[in-house]
Structure formats: C-alpha cells, structure tokens
Image (cartoon, rainbow, N blue to C red):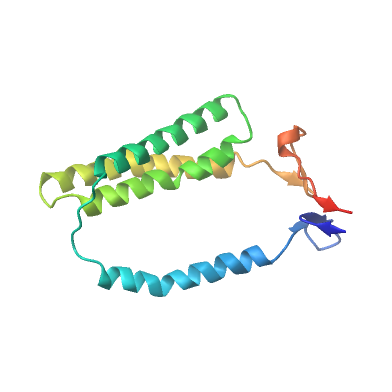
Length: 161
C-alpha cells in the first residue's frame, strides 16, 4: 500500500503533521542550490543591453496575468471561498516581479521615477495585501482534517492497493 499523503495523529507533546514523500523537498532544495552559481553566470556573463522582439507582448501578457490574479483573488474572497488563500498566495509575488522589472529596465530619466513611484504605490502594497490575505485566510486544520467539509478541501490520501 503506497500513500501519497498521510496524517500522523498528535500524541502527548507531539503535534499533528502531514507525512509524505521526502523526495520533492530534496529536489526543490537541490534546484535552488543549483541556481546559485547560475546567478553569477547571469550577473557577469550577460550583455548590459538586449533587444526584445516582443517586448510589448511580454509586458501585456504579464500585466494581464497580474490582473487575472487580483480579480480572481478578490472574487474568491468576496464569496468567502477558502480557495481565496491560494489565489492570494499565487498573486502576491506578481506585483513584486512587475515592480522589479519596471525599475531595473526603466531608462534613467523620468521613466525610472515613474517606475519607482508605481512600485511604491500601488504594486508593492498590493503584494503585501495579497501575502497577508493568503496567510489570514488559510483554512486551519485539526489533526489533519480541514475545517471546511467541502469536497475541494478534503485531504485525501491517495492509496494504491
């Protein structure tokens, strides 16, 4: 019998915790560590400037994704849907990435001032709001059983006989 996710019940002095395969953690840690030397290659090996053939398409697509995330998060939270925490968590980094690339790719004249102003308000505050909402709306669980009983929020252990 193979279990993808199981729950270990709490005992005296022992909190409940989810147990699952450990390999995803090792893959993620290894991938993150492998990126560290790559950062140096990028920082010192890439040219200072580059021409992008589809610059406007890239930005319009990214800002569209950001808008979709904000709208989805707002709609789910308005309906008090517990999945709002997932949408908020997925949306939170988008304004940060937008602000970062706006500032570092802006020309050093008035464009940079506009990019910094947009980063300070509204982009970074939106990211903070989404991050706080993701944490505050996270459904709590009791011994591995979610607070909500809806089918979409039940943890199911996937077992093979």
